[in-house]
View 1 (cartoon, rainbow, N blue to C red):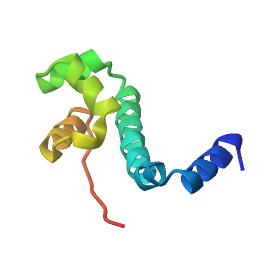
View 2: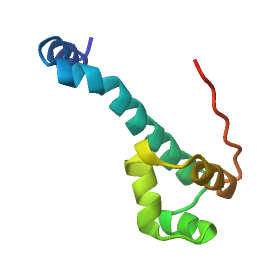
View 3: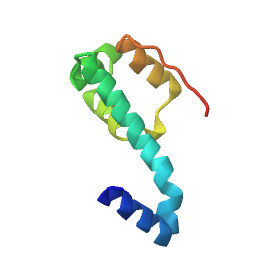
Length: 91
């Protein structure tokens, strides 16, 4: 177990608010990272993608860094601009 994992486990034990919100926050963060990596793998900058989506670079940054409040239609357009298809799975 890494130092970070030890810290998180201990923090979750003593801080119920942190424990309650950690998993949801982590999933949002992870999703934003996946979007950013997909854009980079497509060879696009935030400005390039913004141009394809007819929006501002700041909107792309917001999606990648604060992905907890993004419309499904926006994600579909994001994926399409990267030549990808959006799939949603419930587990």
